[in-house]
Amino acid sequence: MDQALLERFQQAYKDLDLFPLVESKTIEQFRVDYGLPVMVRLKREIEASVKNGKFIFAGHRGCGKSTLLKRLAIEMQPNHSVVFFSIADLIEMSGITHVNILYAIALKLLSQATKRSIPVAEDIKQSLLGCNTTVRTQTSSQATSGEMALGADINVVTAKLQQEKSFRDELEKTFEKRISDLVGKCDRLAAAIQTATKKPILVIIDDLDKLDLPLVEDIYRNNIKSLFSPQFRVVFTIPVSAVQEPQVMGALNSEGIVRPHLFPVAKFFAKVDCHKPDAEPVAKNFDVFLTVLAKRLPNELVDPQTARQIVLKSGGVMRELVRIARECCTECMVQLEIEPDSDSVKINDEILTVAL
Image (cartoon, rainbow, N blue to C red; front, side, top):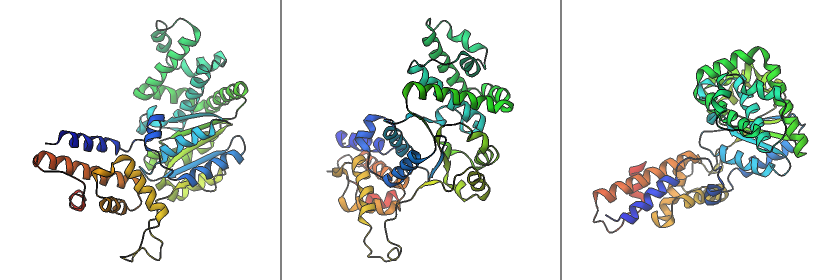
């Protein structure tokens, strides 16, 4: 068996994972200007908005929202103090509420203030980190200086928020009837950072689009006023299916969200050509998908015409492009195992047919 070729297909399979491009290394290696008009529109609207503007971003699973939002965060940094985080890294998805979203924002603002050595009022630290009386006893032996101890406290509380339902339940009891107090802590933290950096705050929350619809309705319909209360700019994500829910959209409209920013599915064919068997795809959209594929699947591993067919079969949905290409890699790895004496194995139309 050609071990070197097998390893190349294994690497391509790994590179075709649907991971968001948020690290500088993967951004440099894989980024393609896909969805740029959507990001620019969102960026300009944020810049033109009032300082407490709220924005909703939606798109299909695996379309590249996280990558685009990370790029937005990077491009907004020169003129904003940006806090970018995934809610999925902080809270179990089934346990997300408007209360712990606001608490997560406060925790991230406190973390940024700590890293920048920005003074924070003691009552804010006590309120956010003192919800569980064991926090300080667990961290007191880990650090001696105030700043180091505070950082340790934040790490412990973050872990508890993510892993312990009892801790999240305690948060709900503590802040549900005092939501204005929690919002006030967020505002005071934002004001402290803004005063120190001379830049307005922008919070970008990723992965709220992965919520089940009942949770979306509870958060965005029943508790929208609380969620939108902080007096700084926030970009929220929302499932694309929720955009079709009149009650959810009615609640958003009532808070000034005329329309969400949508990450569209790429259209490969003009409407008049979509049913013509010999129609040529729109080069601008089609070439973007070809470039995405080429960055993750080396040209020598796939026939050029098959690469075009993989893109066409994706239907303009990025997660489908990745899924089909990964299946092709799997079939090639299987062939290398079953037919070890084969001269060469390459993704061709036959492999694609099996993969599909």
